Length: 532
Image (cartoon, rainbow, N blue to C red; front, side, top):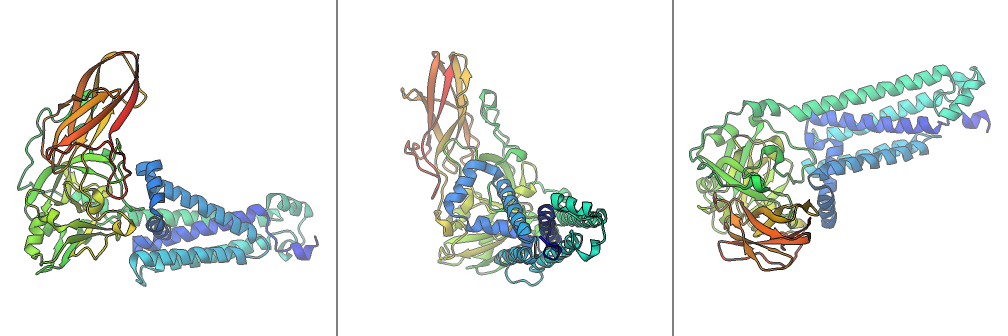
């Protein structure tokens, strides 16, 4: 190859590093600008959220089955790998000319722009984040590419330098001379440092936004209606069940938010509108100055498989939704309340569930004696006993629209049921699956739930034998779970234990297995273990 044809060719390593650093600079710059304007417009967050929204239902179910509450982390890791692979391919394609890499970065920019617009609308200020990301990426890519090319063997800048350095360039892919190599490394390090600083600043600004300080400053008022003390026998934790109240750090979390929304109380507003006589708008202080109820409530995710872990109980503090709706005045013909999160998620709750005087659906501000954790909806979320969370428990709540079922919420558009009462279920917690335990007298224990109906009894059988009634923990209210346990004498060998619950309406959970879609799983939970 002659010098003229080789003068602007980058080595493989230099080309890949150029592309990776430029893409990193683009993403971090966009993240920083988004923190200052609209956090939802951060390019990687917007694209990730768009991927969640557009993913087919089976893909979402598979993600939850495989990764559980780590599904968002799995998505971010997957996105990162795809970006690295595409940037690597774009860099290698740009060894002779920067056009392929520039086209790739422009494509990334357009994707981020479209994704951000789908989340926040055509807001010029919000869209500055993906636009900035694109311009920064293109600018750094062009600069680093020129720096690497000008230092490559055969360029005018190094034509007089010793040829042994040129041979080294063809091996390492960096510069044809020691000076040229140094220039490229310094340039690359500068871009890396700038990217790191921008990313850190964006995370601090967007992550904090005063939320931590805001939450720490919240002093929850004393409830007007306090929850009764828990009875001494509310759980059988010593027998292997969970504690009756789930610690906030262990409470399950399933939602569509790739990045947890962070809204300080000073910026929070709630609007109640639609088919009402009077629109209402509240600040956080105005909401918490109202009549507050305190109540233990068990929540269950519709994605919970038979025997799954997506069920938890907390003592929530909040304002009764029925009081707010009564003040607004619900018009005839209203069928649902469409609740909206600050990140755009919507849930549709039947109006009768929210106005039921015995149900105590809440606009919750407290959870287990402290302000809501940020990941569980701070500053305000909905909690509606007896309904799966996807139709009743919007986090980071900002809007309540009284409307009809013609206005389809997020999950209904994706094939899930409009109405989703929690199904009567039971779970075996002890022994664990495939556990080896001493033969003889053993304890089998677990939980059962039938929110807003209440658990009447739980039965257990071993190796398809006769059903035996288990001991139940002391009831707390019809909206919380109950623990159960039973002592069994078992010989050595493998055994399969099954459980079923009957609620206070007389319904016994069915043995028929059904998937979570469209309105919750059914079937008996079974565990195989070995006594020896």
